[in-house]
Image (cartoon, rainbow, N blue to C red; front, side, top):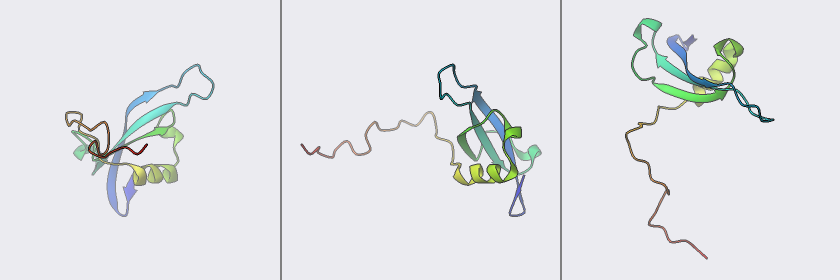
Length: 92
């Protein structure tokens, strides 16, 4: 897809068909690489978990909206704090 004259490659990185429970939605993790398909290798520049069964279920406008909300992937090896500020005292 092209955004502002620049190519972006979109791929489904993973998906969940939902479950048997009422209200379970099918989810897919989309990866976005800036550049053509030939340039899209390694980790994506951005990614986002969204509702859907495949790329074909998203319109071009929806893909643009998903790309706008997508963020850089989180490094799995980087530890994340459980609390935002563990030194902060709790009020009672």
